[in-house]
Length: 461
Ligand SMILES: [Zn+2]
Image (cartoon, rainbow, N blue to C red; front, top):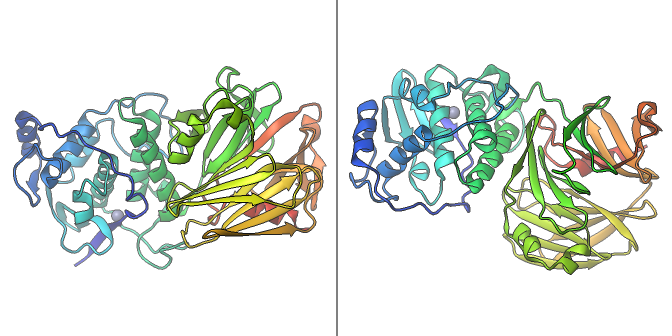
C-alpha cells in the first residue's frame, strides 16, 4: 500500500493551545457539512463538546468558510497561488470522507492513493495539541496529495533521508499548499486572533525550513534604517523605501527569526512590534507574543531605558531572551526556566547577537560586541555560562549581514560596506548616507542557524 504521510512536527508547538469556546455548533451547519463530506471520525455526535473530534473537524471547516482574507496577496515564494479564494471548495472537491488514522507513526494525517479519504491521526483530533489553524493547514496539505503530489527524502536537517520533504516550493506540492495556507493566515486573514496569526507564521517558517529541500526564488533582504528613521529594504545594491516614518519611530530592528524582526523603539516608550516579511512588498506587524515580551511590556520605563540591546531566541522548541542591561547580560531561558546574570569582561558592551540551533539540547550561544570592537562569546548550558573572547574580529564594523554570496557591514559611523576580497570596502553609491541599523531577514536556503554563524564566518580572514 502506498501511503502518503503528512508528517508534521507537532511537538514543536504542542505547548501552544488555545481555549476554544464551548458553544454548540449549529445543527444546520453540521448537516450542511455532512452533505459535503462523510465524517467517520470516532466520537459522539455531540457538537457542543470541543474535545469531540467531530466537533474539531466541523469547526475547522466553519473556520475556513468564515475566513476573511484581504490585503495585497501577491505571488511570492510563500504564496504559490495554488488555492482558490474559497479553500473549502478545494478541500471538498478532493476529500470525500474523513476517518480515524490507524497507521500514523509520527504523522498528523495521511491519505492513501486512489482513495479520496483523509485519515486524521490522534494528535490532530486532540484540541489540546493542535490549533484550528494547524488542522486547516493539514487538511489542505492532504487535499493536495489527492492531486498526485507525494514527498521525497529530506536532504538536510532532522529528517535527513526520510521521505518527509518536498523538492522545491515552486513544484507546488503539499508543503507549498501548507505554506500558502499559513502565510495567508498570517498576513491576510483579517478576522482571526493575533495569536493564531502568529502561530501560522511560525508554521509557515518552520515548514519552509524543515520540509522544502530547495527553497528557490528567495532573495534575502536586509532592512536598513537611516538616522532619520526612514527604513529601506536593501537587496545588496538598491534601496526601496518600505514604510513611513510614523510606523517606525527611532529604534532598532532586531533580527529575531527567519524573516522576522522585532522593532524596538529607542526611547522604549512605545511597545516593540514584531514584523515579518512574507513578500518584499509588504511588512506586516504581528502581535508580539511570549512571556518575555510580556515582561518587557510590563517593565517600568526606567527599566526599559536601561536595555541597550535585546535578543529573542527561537520561537520553536524553547525561547531565549537576553537583555543587555548596563554591561550585564540578563539571560532567561524557557521552558528550562533559567535566569542567569553574566558580568562579562567586555567592559562597555553595545551589541548582542545570538546563534542557536533548533535543538533544545544545543548550547545557547550569545555574542557581545564592545566599544573596542571586541567580540565575546557567551555559552550557556543549563544554569552555567562560559565567556570566550573571539580573536581578530572585523574592526570598525558593528553589524554584518549576508545577502546571497556577499557580505555587508555597517561601521560605527553608519556607513555601508561590502566585503570584497576579504575586506570591508565602503560602498560608493551610499557614501553620503548614514544608517543606524542593518538587519537581514532569515535565509531559508542555508543551513539552520542565525546571523552570528555568518557573522563569525565573515570575521575569518
Ligand atoms: Zn504530506
